[in-house]
Image 1 (tube, rainbow, N blue to C red):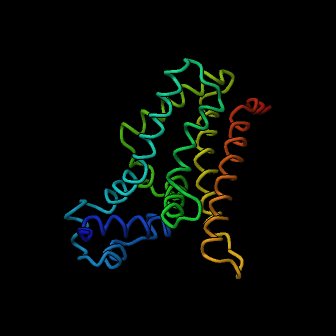
Image 2: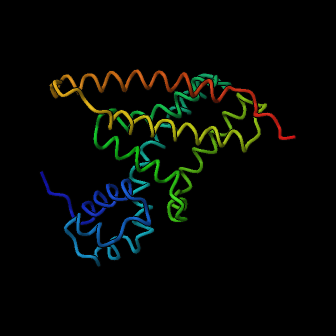
Length: 219
């Protein structure tokens, strides 16, 4: 099997460090040290630290976006009025698939998504491309059709909540301590089972949250 090239090593190192420390907490030197590369390699391959973050984010998010798009296309091919539960499953399901319970890579993806959602750095919010934006807008329109009483701002807030709940759940399951007497196989089985249970709970919870009445207006 071919060894990863320098660009891939930098992407892998950056994904790990951005997920753990955020954009501002991660230096270019820390990334290249972990990757075993020269500091100048970031500029050569990516142009800047900001573009490196954008490339890392797209590498993680674009497969999720593609699966979300396919799920929505399938729903709309069946009916022009998909119910909220099906929309939540189509939107959240690929997030669970990309972040398998108990898997280190899944936990890292979860932490990276949390970082993207919460990092105050402007660079953490300016990486999206037209494809990601288009899928988000399509889901926003589908949810708005299914939930006509919600204002766009509140609907957008609830959709961000789907991302946050899913990502935090995967991190929590990965970090959950295992019994000292448990074998590796038993631990993996228990973790996978817990992950599937949490997926069902999350879909049920998120469907109820998305379907809740609008928040009362401030007086």
